[in-house]
Length: 310
Image 1 (spheres, rainbow, N blue to C red):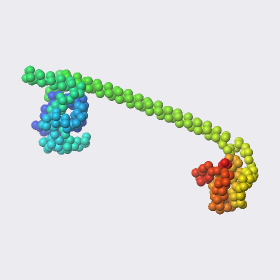
Image 2 (cartoon, rainbow, N blue to C red; image 1 turned 30 degrees about the horizontal axis):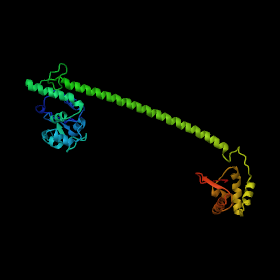
Image 3 (tube, rainbow, N blue to C red; image 1 turned 180 degrees about the vertical axis):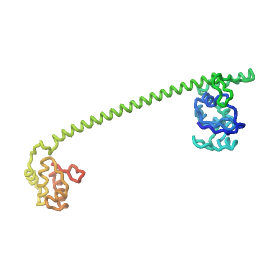
Image 4 (spheres, one colour; image 1 turned 135 degrees about the vertical axis):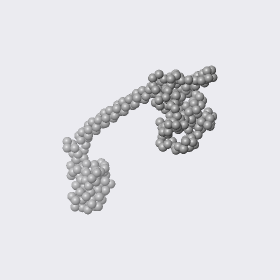
C-alpha cells in the first residue's frame, strides 16, 4: 500500500483520523486498497481498484453515474493541487482516475454486494443519529492512545463486525488455498512416484526383452547355423546369379557372418579385406541386394551397414 508522504511542517499536519483509514476502507470494500494521502489529510484511491472490489463492470460508467465529478479526477490533476508528482511504482500513472474518500463511500452505497451491507447500515445509522440528535460522536477508546498523541476512538460496532467477518472469510480462504496446495503437492508426489515406478518397470521389461533377444537373435553364440558359407554361395549360384570374381570375393567375405545371423561391415573394411576399390565393393553389394541374396536392415553409428539373409 503506497501512502504519499506528508510534509514535516507541524502547521500543515492534519490531526489523526478519528477512525484508522485502512480499517475504514477495508470495512467498506473488503480489501486493502492502494491509497494516496495528501498534505491536507484527504485520501484518494485508484478508481479501478475500488470498482473491481465493489463489482462494478465499467469504471468510467460507475464514476459518472454514482460518484460526483468533484470526488474523482486524474492522478495528475489531483496531485497538481499540492505541487506533487505522480509517485513511482505500484502502476501509478498520470492518467489514472482517483476517487476521494467521499466518492468511495458513494460507490459503496451504490454497490449491491452483500459484504457492503454492514457498512451501509452504519452509514444509515450515523445519518439518522445526526438528523435526530444533531451530531454523531464516536466513543473515545479506553486503552490505545492515538499515535499522534491525540484522542483515539472506538471503532463503530457495525464497522468492527464487518472487519471481523471479512478477516474470518480471508482466513477461511487462506485455509482452503493451503489445503488445495497440500492436495496438489501430494498429487504431484504421487505422480512422481508413479512415474518412477513406471520407469523402473519399463527398465526391467527392457532388460528382460534384451536377455530374450540375446537368446533368439540370429548370430547369438548358442544358435547353431543351419547353413554353411559354402552352401550359401552354392545356393546363390543355383539362382543363376552371375558371380564374377569381384562379386564372389565380396559374397565370400559376407557369407560367414550372414549364416550366423547378420553381417555388419563398413564398405571400406570390405574393400580393404578383398583388395577391391570401395566403389567396386559398393557395386557388388548392390547386385547381391537386387538379386535377393541378402537385404539391408539398417546401419550403425560408426557407418557400418547391416545385412541379413532374406
